[in-house]
Length: 178
Image (cartoon, rainbow, N blue to C red; front, side, top):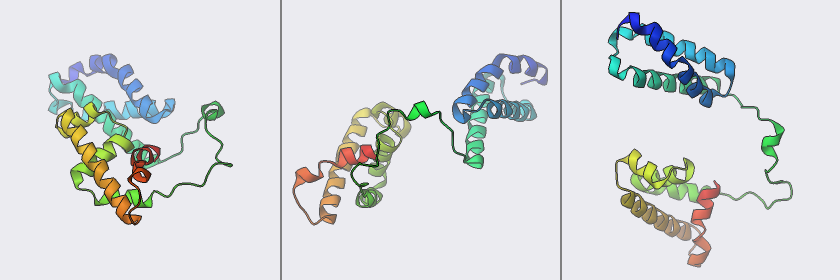
């Protein structure tokens, strides 16, 4: 890409990158600072960037800078009180469930099975998103999840000394709660 075309490129993409970064950092001033840093870094590498991939390159830079910013700042995001109106009062709730057995069982699964469990329940990805991420079919994702849940049930039952299978059919709900 030529340095002469940078100003137009900046004008065309600045607002989109700002909105993209704002979703990550949620603070207007931080998003503006990151936009500035992204375009400075982009300009520093402008001679190495092909024009047809410039926008994709810009988004990748913005994404990486946003993640680095979040890691560096590791701050709490303040939320208005109305965001918590529908949160259950846990002062009278039953005691917290210990997920140690479940977490240990997940760690013992083969990598493919633990990966689909993680993507499904911890990252809340759909079967289609998991299939795209892993480069496998949706049917293969379904099959891996069924096998993973079956192995988790067996491991949990073994850890708890056997028992009724129906007691351990709650693996899905336990995973979803975590």
